Image (cartoon, rainbow, N blue to C red; front, side):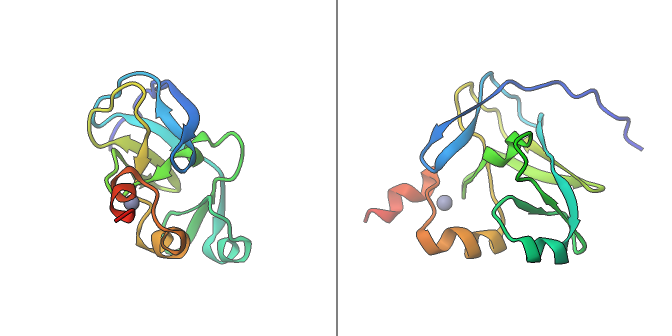
Length: 137
Ligand SMILES: [Zn+2]
């Protein structure tokens, strides 16, 4: 079993971004670093379907985290089709890791996944940095 690693707090900042508010690195972050945990109430998928909302983060076939709480600043991380972070689950917890070195001041983003994208992003068009250029053509 992996030992529980001491979590170092990564300095982050909530700021205005192209898609509303976003979460930005406030110091350089190394590839592989655990940036932040996506925290919230753990509910069943059935309950998640009933509640709806855009801060639902599906863990597996049974559980979802409802991350709408104010203490969950990971909810400010926007979707990107060319992200610098990715999420992984450990039991019923969700962690966001850096998938490459991130410079101070860069916006953090991860790929929200196909289902979320089709339901909540596609209808108004993706506003991530990669897609913004394409859309104007
Ligand atoms: Zn995009």
